[in-house]
Image (cartoon, rainbow, N blue to C red; front, side, top):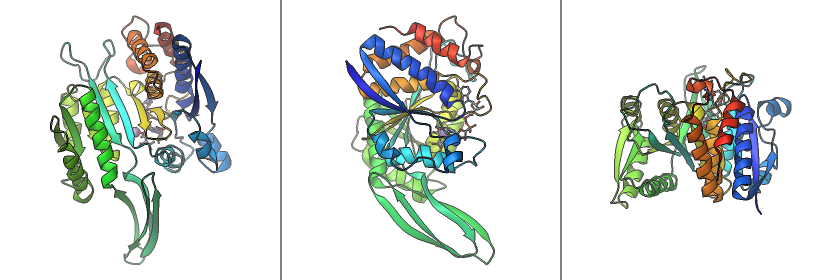
Length: 374
Ligand code: NAD
Ligand code: IPM
Ligand code: MN
């Protein structure tokens, strides 16, 4: 029997609650489709960080690299100031394994209430292709008082960036900066991915999110390289929309978007907006895809406000699991998981709390399990 080795980092807050359900469904899919998953669970997250003062211990990245895929819950905890934990674990994983695509499909399901009702017969079927390694997420920057020098360094699969920034300011004046950067190779590969995905969906248009009007160095470069790549795809039409206009247009017309190509930061923001329009963060799946280890995780975070209450929707984690199966080459099993989620959400069974129902996290997982068939 085919066996896959899967690493899992349940993480913080609702992360363990939703990944438990995803594992349940993926194991059931293996049983139905004739493959096995061996799970290796890693305890990384806030608890581990508070104890050991490190996000990922030495050697863990090499060990993770030996698995076929990684399923992550969520990272982030109110006991740790925002930033270090997410950076040391989540972003480090994305960068180290050069997971340059963050694929975030958004589907609406009949029976799930939406904040903006759709015209009869229409559904949301969009996918955000978010660049996942560069932009404002480079992680280089600093802060100081008066004049100071800040070394900068960032390492990616494609390059190592080193240098320094000299800040000259009046004595005593505090300042902080972050360096956003993009490379031609980084923009080219994500644009090609979005173009190929658009073709494979049988669509003609790609929406490109930008903000070259206000940040011309960074997003002007983004637009220039995207346009150059686009010239090689004469069958497709690339339409540029500024991110502010995107946040205006999407709620007014939630359908018909198809592939939405975003730089890292705007992709983060537009993902949550689109997930709200499509029925909730608890339905929004994601895959961080690269040429090495790929990582699958819900779009949502650790939701400390509902952790431990059973109110978390596990469907984003389960659908991320379906993306993981597809990545392994188990396309039929992935489609069966997608279908089971669809069947559950269109059934008469109680829906999760976020979707207006009363089902607990594990009841929602069990319901998906019931509809999972070969
Ligand atoms: P969040 O996504 O955790 O929560 C935003 C809102 O959505 C909350 O009201 C929450 O209750 C709700 N929500 C999220 N997921 C849900 C689900 N599955 N079912 C029902 N409701 C759900 O975003 P936040 O509050 O900004 O972040 C909380 C923590 O998570 C922070 O530490 C943040 O850095 C971290 N975070 C981690 C990831 C990740 O690991 N991939 C992603 C986003 C945020
Ligand atoms: C996401 C999250 C992360 C991001 C945070 C936790 C660093 O919001 O996966 O969408 O901004 O990418
Ligand atoms: Mn986000």
